[in-house]
Length: 228
Image (cartoon, rainbow, N blue to C red; front, side, top):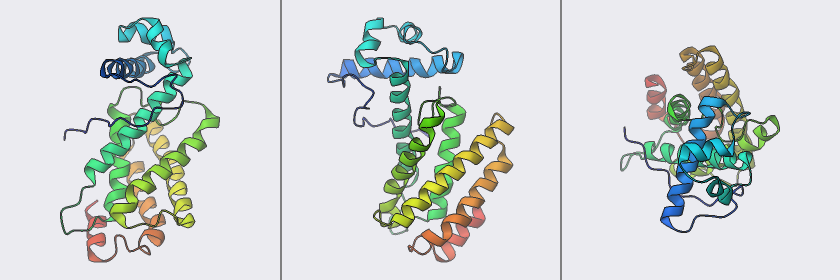
C-alpha cells in the first residue's frame, strides 16, 4: 500500500524559522531525512549537526538556520513522525460509504501503523514522537493520546470534551507504549505474541468507554474482533 505524503503541519517550536519558499522546505526535509539516517547509524548521543549537514549535502549554516542544536533537530523529527503517523492512520480509516467505522478495527490500525513505522522508518527506533530523554516521555504520550482521540472523534462519534475518555486514551497509549517497547526488546521485529496480547488488552480496556459511546457495538464489532 502506498503511504500518504506527510502533510505540512505547523512549524515545531524547536524551529528557529519556518521555511517559506518550496526550496527552503525541501532543504528542511532533507536535513530531517539525514538526521533520521544518522540516528540509525550513531545513536542519539553521537548525533551531531555537522554529521547531519554532511549527510544532507548542505552547509552547516543551513542546519543552524533552522535549529540551534541537535536536540531541537531531533524534536522536529519527532514532530514530523507524529504528523506522518496521524496521516497513515487517517488513510487507513476511510470507511466505505454507509458503513460506520468500528473502533476495534481502528485500534488495530493504530497499533499496526506504529509497528510499520518502527520496522521501516529511518530513525524511528530512537526518535519516535519525542527525543530519547526520560523526562520528555510522559508529555509525548499525552500529545499522542490527544492526537489519536481528536483524529478518531469524528469517525467514531466521540465527545472530545469527555474527560473520562481523555484519560482512557492516555492510559491506553501509556499501556500500549510499554508493551510494544517490550515486544521490540524481546524480538527486533516486534514479538508477535506480545503484539497480539497488546491488541487484546486495548480492546478489553477500551470496550467500556467506546461501546458506551455507541462505537463498535453489535455484530459488526464482534465480527471484526474475531477477524483481527
